Length: 288
Image 1 (spheres, rainbow, N blue to C red):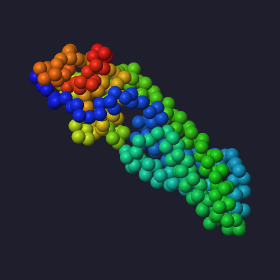
Image 2: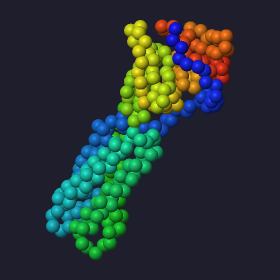
Image 3: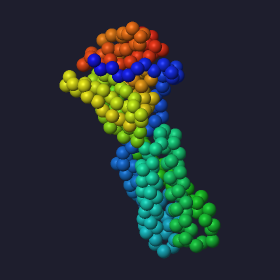
Image 4: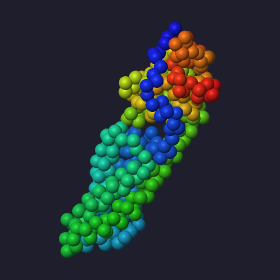
């Protein structure tokens, strides 16, 4: 018989009983992929060039022509400025992505900052090219129209598509009963059928997921925390039963107390026994 350790009572288990609210404002997992940011690098620059050339908004034809038939040349240079700026900012965002828990609000702020940076570089280019007596910040005001009003279209379009695709992937996984486990860098590392999971154990900076595969007990070590995975597993009746353990209620055969009044959950696979704390015993019993 496998016993997984003593019951820990010297901790604040009331925190384990609190409902962990799933943050609906979190970015989809798509934003942890480089290909997603590649769209943000390329599409806004191409859209910028096409929109300016076709519609010539905000007096751009006169502004960029400069009386020397330089309209297409200057538009192309400005497109390159947009492209290079987004490449740099998106590479920075992608490299730092794993260190921050991103939400839609934070991402929107990043996009705004990105467009501000683009604005200042576009203004610098026009300031150096035109030499018409205007101060630099007058060009900043003019270029705000190009960066914000024009680039909002591709930014908004890409974001809507990513949100819909991310929602679709999440719904498909839920319909199949699959749980997508991500590590601290928010990269998906394991996808498991919720019914196959026996229990989850926390150890140092990792969680170890024990599951059935063709009738055999296997495990997968994931760098993450119990609190982080709680919103993923709790909808599938996998609940915390002790400080360092989550257990799948569908695999519990019985809850027992030993002569020392220590409580354990006997699982239906290979005589596995998982500890249950006294404070969480009532909750687990009620859910069964």
